[in-house]
Amino acid sequence: MPRVIADADLFEFTLALADDALVLGHRLSEWSGRGPSLEEDIALSNLGLDLVGQARLFYTYAGELDGNGRDEDDLAYFRNADGYRNLLIVELEPGDFALTIVRQFLYAAFLHPYFAALCRSTDARLAAIAAKAVKEMAYHLRHSSEWLIRLGDGTPESHRRAVEALDLLWGYTGEMFEPTTAEQRVVAAGIAPDRTQIRQPWTTTVDAVLAEATLQRPAQRGMQSGGRHGRHTEGLDRMLAEMQVLARQHPGAKW
Amino acid sequence: MTEIATPLWEVFIRNRSGLPHKHCGSVHAADATMALQAARDVYTRRGESVSLWVVPSSAIIASDPVDRDVLFEPTGSKIYRHPTFYDVPDEVGHM
Image 1: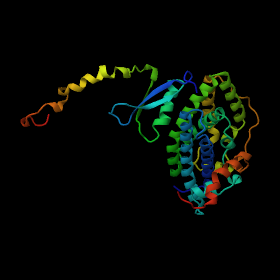
Image 2: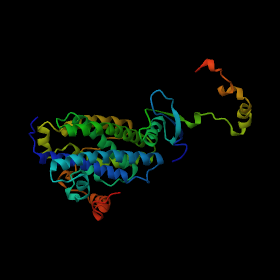
Image 3: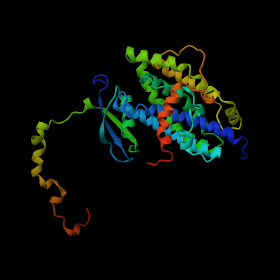
Image 4: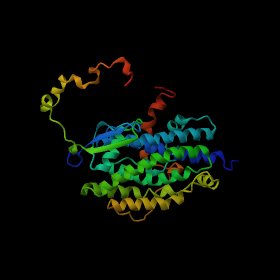
Protein backbone atom coordinates (compact mmCIF):
# COMPACT_ATOMS: atom_id res chain seq x y z
CA MET A 1 0.00 0.00 0.00
CA PRO A 2 1.52 3.37 -0.94
CA ARG A 3 2.22 5.65 1.98
CA VAL A 4 0.38 8.93 1.54
CA ILE A 5 1.62 10.44 4.75
CA ALA A 6 4.93 12.17 5.52
CA ASP A 7 7.14 10.31 7.96
CA ALA A 8 7.48 13.56 9.93
CA ASP A 9 3.72 13.61 10.62
CA LEU A 10 3.68 9.94 11.60
CA PHE A 11 6.72 10.53 13.83
CA GLU A 12 5.02 13.39 15.65
CA PHE A 13 1.84 11.38 16.10
CA THR A 14 3.69 8.30 17.40
CA LEU A 15 5.94 10.37 19.65
CA ALA A 16 2.90 11.97 21.32
CA LEU A 17 1.43 8.53 22.11
CA ALA A 18 4.81 7.47 23.51
CA ASP A 19 5.11 10.59 25.67
CA ASP A 20 1.58 10.15 27.06
CA ALA A 21 2.42 6.58 28.06
CA LEU A 22 5.84 7.30 29.56
CA VAL A 23 4.82 10.35 31.58
CA LEU A 24 1.76 8.67 33.11
CA GLY A 25 3.75 5.48 33.63
CA HIS A 26 6.37 7.44 35.55
CA ARG A 27 3.72 9.24 37.60
CA LEU A 28 2.30 5.86 38.63
CA SER A 29 5.77 4.57 39.48
CA GLU A 30 6.05 7.41 42.02
CA TRP A 31 3.60 5.42 44.18
CA SER A 32 6.01 2.49 44.50
CA GLY A 33 6.63 1.97 48.20
CA ARG A 34 4.03 4.62 49.13
CA GLY A 35 0.74 3.00 48.11
CA PRO A 36 -2.22 3.17 50.50
CA SER A 37 -1.97 -0.60 51.00
CA LEU A 38 0.47 -3.31 49.99
CA GLU A 39 -2.00 -4.60 47.42
CA GLU A 40 -2.60 -1.21 45.79
CA ASP A 41 1.07 -0.32 45.90
CA ILE A 42 1.89 -3.21 43.61
CA ALA A 43 -1.25 -2.66 41.53
CA LEU A 44 -0.23 0.92 40.72
CA SER A 45 3.28 -0.26 39.86
CA ASN A 46 1.75 -2.85 37.51
CA LEU A 47 -0.29 -0.16 35.77
CA GLY A 48 2.83 1.99 35.46
CA LEU A 49 4.81 -0.88 33.95
CA ASP A 50 2.07 -1.49 31.37
CA LEU A 51 2.39 2.13 30.25
CA VAL A 52 6.21 2.16 30.22
CA GLY A 53 6.05 -0.98 28.08
CA GLN A 54 3.68 0.76 25.65
CA ALA A 55 5.97 3.81 25.61
CA ARG A 56 8.99 1.69 24.65
CA LEU A 57 7.18 0.23 21.63
CA PHE A 58 5.96 3.64 20.45
CA TYR A 59 9.40 5.27 20.99
CA THR A 60 11.19 2.53 19.10
CA TYR A 61 8.84 2.96 16.15
CA ALA A 62 9.08 6.77 16.36
CA GLY A 63 12.88 6.50 16.32
CA GLU A 64 12.72 4.45 13.12
CA LEU A 65 10.39 6.97 11.47
CA ASP A 66 12.63 9.83 12.56
CA GLY A 67 15.53 8.30 10.68
CA ASN A 68 18.21 10.06 12.74
CA GLY A 69 19.26 6.92 14.56
CA ARG A 70 17.58 7.88 17.83
CA ASP A 71 16.45 4.92 19.92
CA GLU A 72 13.88 4.71 22.71
CA ASP A 73 16.36 5.90 25.36
CA ASP A 74 17.47 8.90 23.30
CA LEU A 75 13.86 10.01 22.94
CA ALA A 76 12.94 9.40 26.58
CA TYR A 77 16.03 10.73 28.33
CA PHE A 78 17.49 13.40 26.08
CA ARG A 79 14.59 15.73 25.41
CA ASN A 80 13.60 18.54 27.78
CA ALA A 81 10.04 19.31 28.85
CA ASP A 82 9.45 21.65 25.90
CA GLY A 83 10.27 18.74 23.59
CA TYR A 84 7.67 16.49 25.21
CA ARG A 85 4.32 16.20 23.43
CA ASN A 86 2.19 14.54 26.14
CA LEU A 87 -1.25 15.65 27.26
CA LEU A 88 -1.26 17.84 30.36
CA ILE A 89 -3.57 15.48 32.27
CA VAL A 90 -0.91 12.77 32.45
CA GLU A 91 1.84 15.04 33.80
CA LEU A 92 -0.02 16.61 36.75
CA GLU A 93 1.56 15.71 40.06
CA PRO A 94 -0.03 12.60 41.56
CA GLY A 95 -1.61 14.36 44.52
CA ASP A 96 -3.57 12.00 46.75
CA PHE A 97 -4.82 8.52 45.91
CA ALA A 98 -8.19 9.90 44.74
CA LEU A 99 -6.48 12.11 42.16
CA THR A 100 -4.40 9.21 40.90
CA ILE A 101 -7.49 7.01 40.55
CA VAL A 102 -9.69 9.68 38.95
CA ARG A 103 -6.96 10.51 36.43
CA GLN A 104 -6.42 6.84 35.60
CA PHE A 105 -10.14 6.43 35.12
CA LEU A 106 -10.66 9.52 32.92
CA TYR A 107 -7.64 8.62 30.81
CA ALA A 108 -8.29 4.88 30.51
CA ALA A 109 -11.93 5.60 29.57
CA PHE A 110 -10.47 7.48 26.60
CA LEU A 111 -7.50 5.30 25.74
CA HIS A 112 -9.32 1.96 25.81
CA PRO A 113 -11.75 2.81 22.97
CA TYR A 114 -9.00 4.79 21.22
CA PHE A 115 -6.64 1.80 21.12
CA ALA A 116 -9.53 -0.45 20.10
CA ALA A 117 -9.90 1.81 17.05
CA LEU A 118 -6.11 2.01 16.49
CA CYS A 119 -6.08 -1.81 16.21
CA ARG A 120 -7.70 -1.28 12.80
CA SER A 121 -4.93 1.09 11.62
CA THR A 122 -3.56 0.52 8.14
CA ASP A 123 -0.10 0.90 9.73
CA ALA A 124 0.78 -2.63 10.84
CA ARG A 125 3.21 -1.50 13.56
CA LEU A 126 0.73 0.82 15.24
CA ALA A 127 -2.03 -1.78 14.92
CA ALA A 128 0.18 -4.39 16.61
CA ILE A 129 1.09 -2.08 19.51
CA ALA A 130 -2.57 -1.15 19.96
CA ALA A 131 -3.61 -4.82 19.95
CA LYS A 132 -1.30 -5.46 22.92
CA ALA A 133 -2.13 -2.22 24.73
CA VAL A 134 -5.91 -2.42 24.40
CA LYS A 135 -6.06 -5.39 26.79
CA GLU A 136 -3.91 -3.55 29.31
CA MET A 137 -6.10 -0.47 29.12
CA ALA A 138 -9.22 -2.60 29.60
CA TYR A 139 -7.79 -3.60 32.97
CA HIS A 140 -6.75 -0.02 33.84
CA LEU A 141 -10.32 1.04 33.18
CA ARG A 142 -11.77 -1.76 35.28
CA HIS A 143 -9.36 -1.25 38.17
CA SER A 144 -9.83 2.52 38.32
CA SER A 145 -13.63 2.29 37.85
CA GLU A 146 -14.02 -0.11 40.77
CA TRP A 147 -11.90 2.13 42.98
CA LEU A 148 -13.72 5.29 41.91
CA ILE A 149 -17.10 3.72 42.71
CA ARG A 150 -15.86 2.86 46.20
CA LEU A 151 -14.25 6.25 46.79
CA GLY A 152 -17.30 8.15 45.59
CA ASP A 153 -19.80 5.93 47.38
CA GLY A 154 -17.55 5.33 50.40
CA THR A 155 -16.94 7.55 53.43
CA PRO A 156 -17.59 11.32 53.57
CA GLU A 157 -13.82 11.87 53.28
CA SER A 158 -13.30 9.56 50.31
CA HIS A 159 -16.32 11.18 48.58
CA ARG A 160 -14.95 14.69 49.21
CA ARG A 161 -11.53 13.75 47.87
CA ALA A 162 -13.04 12.15 44.77
CA VAL A 163 -15.09 15.31 44.11
CA GLU A 164 -12.01 17.52 44.51
CA ALA A 165 -9.94 15.34 42.17
CA LEU A 166 -12.70 15.27 39.57
CA ASP A 167 -13.06 19.07 39.71
CA LEU A 168 -9.33 19.59 39.33
CA LEU A 169 -8.88 17.11 36.47
CA TRP A 170 -12.02 17.89 34.49
CA GLY A 171 -10.48 20.98 32.90
CA TYR A 172 -7.73 18.80 31.42
CA THR A 173 -10.01 16.29 29.70
CA GLY A 174 -10.75 18.44 26.63
CA GLU A 175 -7.21 18.08 25.32
CA MET A 176 -7.70 14.32 24.89
CA PHE A 177 -10.11 15.06 22.03
CA GLU A 178 -7.98 17.67 20.20
CA PRO A 179 -5.88 16.32 17.31
CA THR A 180 -2.88 18.38 16.20
CA THR A 181 -2.69 19.41 12.56
CA ALA A 182 -0.06 16.71 11.93
CA GLU A 183 -2.37 14.18 13.55
CA GLN A 184 -5.27 15.32 11.36
CA ARG A 185 -3.21 14.38 8.33
CA VAL A 186 -2.44 10.99 9.87
CA VAL A 187 -6.18 10.52 10.46
CA ALA A 188 -6.99 11.54 6.89
CA ALA A 189 -4.52 8.93 5.63
CA GLY A 190 -6.49 6.25 7.48
CA ILE A 191 -3.66 5.46 9.88
CA ALA A 192 -5.02 6.96 13.11
CA PRO A 193 -8.51 6.99 14.57
CA ASP A 194 -10.24 10.36 14.83
CA ARG A 195 -9.99 11.22 18.53
CA THR A 196 -12.96 13.57 18.34
CA GLN A 197 -15.05 10.44 17.67
CA ILE A 198 -14.00 8.93 20.99
CA ARG A 199 -15.85 11.60 22.96
CA GLN A 200 -19.17 9.81 22.70
CA PRO A 201 -18.04 6.39 24.06
CA TRP A 202 -15.91 8.21 26.65
CA THR A 203 -18.89 10.22 27.88
CA THR A 204 -21.04 7.10 28.11
CA THR A 205 -18.43 5.32 30.26
CA VAL A 206 -17.76 8.34 32.46
CA ASP A 207 -21.44 9.04 33.09
CA ALA A 208 -22.17 5.41 33.98
CA VAL A 209 -19.32 5.10 36.47
CA LEU A 210 -19.88 8.53 38.03
CA ALA A 211 -23.55 7.67 38.56
CA GLU A 212 -22.60 4.46 40.35
CA ALA A 213 -20.02 6.39 42.37
CA THR A 214 -22.70 8.96 43.39
CA LEU A 215 -20.59 11.70 41.78
CA GLN A 216 -21.72 14.56 39.53
CA ARG A 217 -20.08 15.42 36.24
CA PRO A 218 -18.42 18.84 36.78
CA ALA A 219 -19.95 21.77 34.88
CA GLN A 220 -18.55 22.62 31.44
CA ARG A 221 -15.81 25.23 31.54
CA GLY A 222 -12.66 26.34 29.79
CA MET A 223 -10.28 23.54 29.01
CA GLN A 224 -6.50 23.60 29.46
CA SER A 225 -4.32 22.50 26.60
CA GLY A 226 -0.84 23.01 25.19
CA GLY A 227 0.95 19.78 26.02
CA ARG A 228 0.94 18.65 22.40
CA HIS A 229 2.83 21.85 21.53
CA GLY A 230 5.41 21.57 24.29
CA ARG A 231 3.71 23.97 26.72
CA HIS A 232 3.78 22.15 30.04
CA THR A 233 3.31 22.65 33.76
CA GLU A 234 6.32 23.15 36.01
CA GLY A 235 5.74 19.71 37.47
CA LEU A 236 6.90 18.06 34.26
CA ASP A 237 10.33 19.75 34.55
CA ARG A 238 10.77 18.34 38.04
CA MET A 239 9.58 14.91 36.99
CA LEU A 240 11.91 14.74 34.00
CA ALA A 241 14.84 16.00 36.07
CA GLU A 242 14.44 13.00 38.34
CA MET A 243 13.65 10.55 35.57
CA GLN A 244 16.52 11.61 33.30
CA VAL A 245 19.34 12.38 35.74
CA LEU A 246 20.96 8.95 35.69
CA ALA A 247 20.90 8.55 31.92
CA ARG A 248 22.32 12.06 31.46
CA GLN A 249 25.11 11.68 34.02
CA HIS A 250 26.15 8.30 32.68
CA PRO A 251 25.23 8.28 28.97
CA GLY A 252 25.15 4.79 27.54
CA ALA A 253 25.50 3.17 30.98
CA LYS A 254 24.24 -0.41 31.17
CA TRP A 255 23.17 -2.37 34.24
CA MET B 1 -6.34 0.03 56.56
CA THR B 2 -8.45 -1.47 59.28
CA GLU B 3 -9.34 -5.13 59.42
CA ILE B 4 -13.06 -4.23 59.54
CA ALA B 5 -12.98 -2.04 56.40
CA THR B 6 -10.75 -4.42 54.47
CA PRO B 7 -11.02 -7.98 55.75
CA LEU B 8 -8.70 -10.79 54.74
CA TRP B 9 -9.32 -13.05 51.73
CA GLU B 10 -7.51 -16.29 50.83
CA VAL B 11 -6.30 -16.53 47.24
CA PHE B 12 -6.23 -19.69 45.12
CA ILE B 13 -4.75 -19.83 41.63
CA ARG B 14 -4.88 -22.41 38.89
CA ASN B 15 -1.77 -22.25 36.78
CA ARG B 16 -2.89 -24.55 33.97
CA SER B 17 -6.24 -25.81 32.78
CA GLY B 18 -6.98 -29.18 34.26
CA LEU B 19 -4.94 -28.70 37.43
CA PRO B 20 -6.63 -27.88 40.75
CA HIS B 21 -6.61 -24.39 42.24
CA LYS B 22 -3.89 -24.08 44.89
CA HIS B 23 -3.69 -21.76 47.85
CA CYS B 24 -1.02 -19.12 47.23
CA GLY B 25 -1.55 -16.42 49.87
CA SER B 26 -3.97 -13.75 51.00
CA VAL B 27 -5.00 -10.14 50.38
CA HIS B 28 -6.88 -7.44 52.25
CA ALA B 29 -9.82 -5.96 50.34
CA ALA B 30 -13.13 -4.23 50.99
CA ASP B 31 -15.29 -6.72 49.07
CA ALA B 32 -15.19 -9.69 46.71
CA THR B 33 -14.66 -7.67 43.52
CA MET B 34 -11.76 -5.73 45.00
CA ALA B 35 -10.31 -8.92 46.49
CA LEU B 36 -10.27 -10.57 43.07
CA GLN B 37 -8.61 -7.48 41.61
CA ALA B 38 -5.99 -7.37 44.38
CA ALA B 39 -5.31 -11.09 43.94
CA ARG B 40 -4.75 -10.53 40.21
CA ASP B 41 -2.41 -7.61 40.92
CA VAL B 42 -0.38 -9.32 43.64
CA TYR B 43 -0.22 -13.00 42.65
CA THR B 44 -0.44 -13.23 38.84
CA ARG B 45 2.30 -10.84 37.71
CA ARG B 46 4.45 -13.50 36.07
CA GLY B 47 1.87 -15.42 34.09
CA GLU B 48 1.15 -17.86 36.92
CA SER B 49 -2.56 -18.04 36.50
CA VAL B 50 -5.42 -18.98 34.19
CA SER B 51 -8.04 -18.78 36.93
CA LEU B 52 -8.41 -17.17 40.36
CA TRP B 53 -10.55 -17.84 43.42
CA VAL B 54 -10.85 -15.64 46.47
CA VAL B 55 -12.57 -16.82 49.65
CA PRO B 56 -13.21 -14.80 52.82
CA SER B 57 -10.65 -16.04 55.34
CA SER B 58 -13.42 -16.06 57.92
CA ALA B 59 -15.23 -18.75 55.86
CA ILE B 60 -12.40 -21.22 56.38
CA ILE B 61 -12.88 -23.58 59.31
CA ALA B 62 -9.47 -24.68 60.48
CA SER B 63 -8.44 -27.56 62.73
CA ASP B 64 -7.02 -26.59 66.10
CA PRO B 65 -3.25 -27.14 66.38
CA VAL B 66 -3.89 -28.46 69.89
CA ASP B 67 -5.77 -31.38 68.33
CA ARG B 68 -2.81 -32.47 66.26
CA ASP B 69 -2.02 -35.54 68.31
CA VAL B 70 -5.62 -36.67 68.45
CA LEU B 71 -6.41 -36.08 64.79
CA PHE B 72 -3.24 -36.96 62.98
CA GLU B 73 -0.82 -38.89 65.17
CA PRO B 74 -2.75 -42.21 65.14
CA THR B 75 -2.27 -42.58 61.37
CA GLY B 76 1.48 -42.90 61.94
CA SER B 77 1.10 -46.56 62.91
CA LYS B 78 -1.19 -47.51 59.98
CA ILE B 79 1.55 -48.22 57.51
CA TYR B 80 -0.68 -50.75 55.73
CA ARG B 81 -2.62 -47.76 54.33
CA HIS B 82 0.28 -46.99 52.01
CA PRO B 83 0.33 -48.94 48.75
CA THR B 84 4.07 -49.55 49.20
CA PHE B 85 3.24 -51.76 52.20
CA TYR B 86 2.16 -54.55 49.89
CA ASP B 87 4.44 -56.78 47.86
CA VAL B 88 2.99 -57.02 44.40
CA PRO B 89 3.87 -60.27 42.60
CA ASP B 90 5.93 -59.73 39.45
CA GLU B 91 3.28 -61.48 37.34
CA VAL B 92 0.85 -58.62 38.05
CA GLY B 93 2.99 -56.20 36.09
CA HIS B 94 2.05 -52.56 36.17
CA MET B 95 -1.03 -51.77 38.18
